[in-house]
View 1 (cartoon, rainbow, N blue to C red):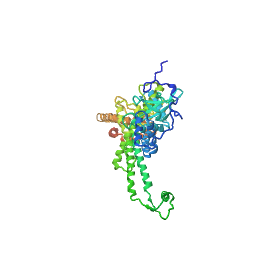
View 2: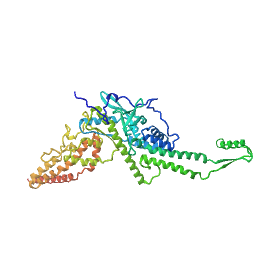
View 3: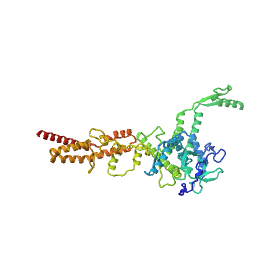
View 4: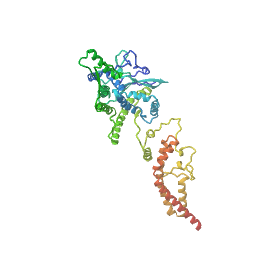
Length: 545
């Protein structure tokens, strides 16, 4: 019995299989991993914000992470644009590329494909993408074993406040244990995701670093706007008292003026009066509050989405909107590729190592929107190359058409000419459409069909005028060979790639208008003319006899 190969994580540490099925970073009420958070955003000032960010830069990210969480809860615009970016990636279909065409690699890739069909995957990916806002995220892998087979049971988001970075580089992730000590991450237990908004350490690469400043300034503006609207949006209440009024009379007048807005009633002595002074140009006085809030929102849109056209009504026209949309697609593609690389490194490779041991090559997750591709043109271009001897992987062709790899027990579609009991065309149209196969040089033609017609015409023509008609018919037969081979080659590729008869029918109907049958039609027309001429010659010879 061979020795089981040692499995190591990305940092070169040995994996303890016995600990993989246990949760190591679950929350604990009253412990160091408490789900209860603070609210450093309350009463936030520029000095406090600078202090919070400085703490994070020095390796203490707790208040920064709590602030990042708070602004997502209190700023609808930031929550909306950040959620849009995360959901745009979490809802993209995930595909799997096998490491090779070998049976084992195909089986491993199918194992991953089956796991990706889980309904929870979209939400799990959304949680992993918490890294976009905060700069990094941690997701614990809860493994399970069934009949000796390893498989991720679920992916649990973990609060980043429960993790730290090594002080010597502020890059190596550490976890807080039950005693509050910083310990290395358990091997094969975490997906450590980093999708940076800017280059640098994870603590300074999140979008929240920009969003906190914008949110604070907008909060000041909105507070001032609210005070202005409440105070100056109503008439100013001005109380007047006489020269001999006592302090008690003044207090009575002040209470009357203060309460008149809510009570709409007041009692004052005859010697006093209350005037209502209307505020002028209220509308123009509040414009700058709204403009400043909108401007700050646009800056957040630029930071998160790379543009403003999908979140603000004003755009620079149709062309500008299209340009902005392309920028957002660039960001989406970058996020998707970064996420796929993270999952391949921290999830797929560990899974394959646990199940099959270290490999030279691993299946690869691909997260990308499908590019629009003309499959008919692909089939038409590929068929002649295969006929010419080009070697092509079946798995690549299946991936192009979205077809799965067949199992041993699956019923496989094959060309009708290769099925038992199906004969080539007999000249009466039986099977001629899909079974007739024209000979290459040095091969004999099948009986029946067009080939039989050519043979009979040639025989008749030779009996009448062999020196003139026979060479023409031989030349036509040779010219028909490559034309038929090219047409049938394209159809065979479609038949090989189709997963069902209905799918093959749709592919054939779609691709047939592009099949070049002109050359074969010309040869066939010449052959029919020669056959007709040969027949007339034979009839005339019989009549003369």
